[in-house]
Length: 403
Ligand SMILES: [Zn+2]
Ligand SMILES: [Zn+2]
Picture 1 (cartoon, rainbow, N blue to C red):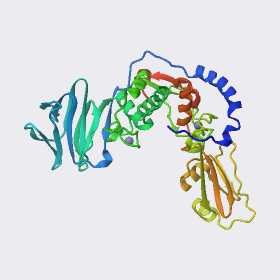
Picture 2: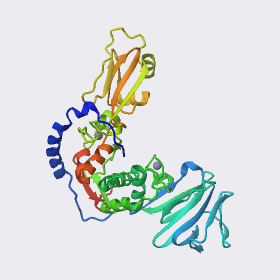
Picture 3: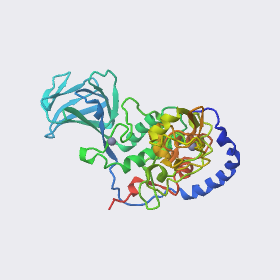
């Protein structure tokens, strides 16, 4: 949650835009419909998430937090039943697993499943020398992969969504905003369920997929928002799950998908946004020597004295041009590590001075704009319909299998 001083550039036309914006919103409300089809679900309600792949886990301590757990080996034999007063340690022993309990279990297995009994079984883990408890719901499978423990959590997608939303948004946001992030997260997860198919699970728990942390259990507030939108995902006009891109702050105008990632998508088109311009990330400044600027961009170094350095973006531009050299603003952002592609620049005293707006790639939903809209009373469907053009909300049970 960020708040801060107003961006002067945008506040100039903020109020006049509000009127046209509200009438625009009325159109969007009609566009973003919630459609319910009666078809058979082709998507599982449980997903598998690999935990701490990058940590190189060699030992883990598993303990139920609530409920009873059953430990099953690779032959499907139940080898142990235990509750929260017990703990199981699992360590690598010559490419297999040594499993031990406080009360006498001592076995070597190839893989092991910890299956909870009851309504909402949950457990916590400690990895290697980390003394913190990482808590999770439902089931855990442990095996050996590339010399490390491969931990895979089987969890309901709704619990997964709540956990991811908590990590992404943090605490204290408006409930309507948590609903928005829940739908974005569920859409993204459902769209990417095949991402790790060759690895034998659905999603990983770090930024490659979405951050799913055992250290950030979802609060009741987030759980409530997730369950209020349970099963809902966003689809485009062809009923395909959308790429639910979002970024921190658009600076007053979101970007076209094709200007940042080459591929055009009907629902990721530029919109004006007057709601985020008062946020902390709405403006930025950067200064760098001209020599460094031209070298890093690979531009001609013998620039004429008369080179026209002044560059302005009243609206977002795809290219920055200087004499005969040209570069995409998206590429420029990567090369110069700029906060956004939405900037003006000029040269003063041998330095290139950027006056930028926004934070992030600028495509799709602007988080700080959406937060503001939620705060002042817009509903999650109105807000999603504003940033993602022409999309509908449907339950995952209505998705058709891909051909
Ligand atoms: Zn991943
Ligand atoms: Zn914005």
